[in-house]
Image 1 (cartoon, rainbow, N blue to C red):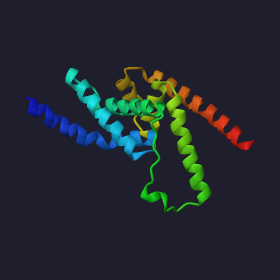
Image 2 (spheres, rainbow, N blue to C red):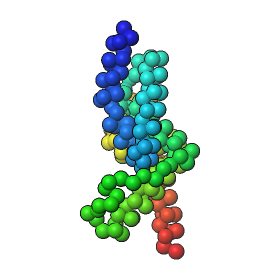
Image 3 (tube, one colour):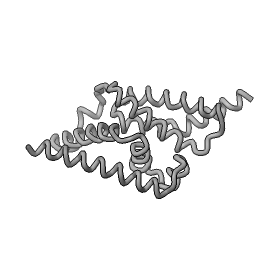
Image 4 (cartoon, rainbow, N blue to C red):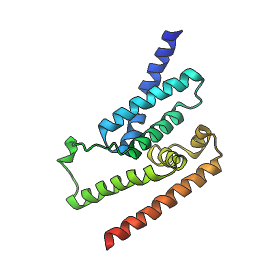
Length: 169
């Protein structure tokens, strides 16, 4: 029985590891931090799985990856990392600098959202999960998903206006 559970668990990890890592990386911007968060997510998911059945592995893992990544950011445990692609670029230096600044801003802004808004935003925009699946995963109505997504976008939009005003001075 225990061997069967571990075999199924290995399949779950194999099927979802890239998605969990991708969510964490998009939020954190660091491979090392994303790897650490991914391990934490699967440890927590295994504990939840041991306590009872899981309705949606995608939903649970994306939600955990989002929340644990936000926790990581909120603790200011970021690291600077050089990647091979940092030295070579097909875009202009100005465009690359703007893209990096916006990505950094978005990570910080998403970390300031309430957990529910951040989770819905990440699930919908980063992972392209439908409103219906988000609704079922988070056990809220599709209308609540839409409202939460709207509030998250409004909050991020107002922060973008503030960022733009700060740069135009």
